[in-house]
Picture 1: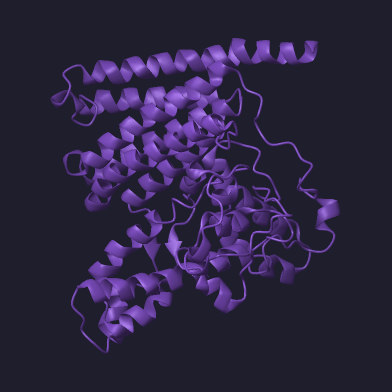
Picture 2: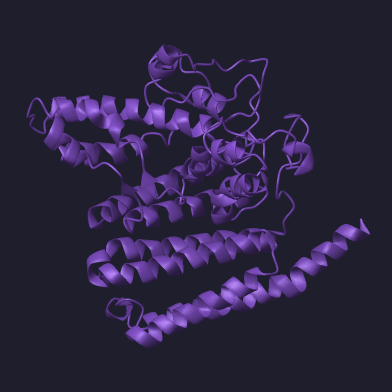
Length: 423
């Protein structure tokens, strides 16, 4: 937990710097593929996922350590060879978990967030699940366990393999020659994120593209078919929590309304998007049928809302950095209180990004919650020992944030609506 937090302290500014560089390059080229609102939503999703992981809010039904203790034929040392073996097996594991997330209705819920952006950029790589609490697929690491790959090798290699998937989420890098035959490249992954019928459910590999070629899911990017990004049932929100549970909510409702008990059960395990017969007409869901003719979500926003959203995201990153850097000092129980504050914060300002008037309720809850924390603990999780006026900074920011939220709800959004009606 603490070690992973320290790793993220290093990784977060690197990712953020690369996202900024991509944004600047887009301005230079005159083609911006990273709208600020989309990027804020993506980075906010990454924050929720990283906080969830640091808090340990996910478990494996099978422990890798247990698999090694029961299945290991050899006893390997942690050296370069075992790290290479572990990396290949983790990539095999990643291919199949990724593929099943696309092909099985229930598992799509945890992965839809990653595809929910209607853009394709480095920031959208950070759209990761907060809805996955149980890992069912540790059994795919059995080959590593049989070979006796140490648990510490797997623990270190997993985040490295995840971080290496960041770079190829971009539209600014074309095909890469010989590397296309070995590695997953931006071209391969653009196909994977596309909703064009030619590209759907292809290129599930994470580092090595040959898994797709071996298992029949490879698709080349075609020059005559420009990739269109998103999900066919568009999220239509910037709020990562809502995106995380949208598909699950559809499944729950469809299972509830299904008259056939067989349908109530099998809906969870059928191919992604399957619904009982007649449900598309009886309980319609907005779906993109023409990928070249639909309106992207949330493209009309005032500069004030855009810049305030960026500011909220950056301030939240400061709060998260303090959490990750002070896990031991904050304490095991208190980090869950801190994590709850981060989750409420992101829910609040992304709801405001959606121009939802009820965001003021979440902002008020956040203010009262933080006030209770400072009242109960005496300061903001030891911040006063770092900055003498820590309490005043936190409460000052929260007060301003609440007032600005009220301004947007009561004045700015109404002025914007009037301007639209008058045009």
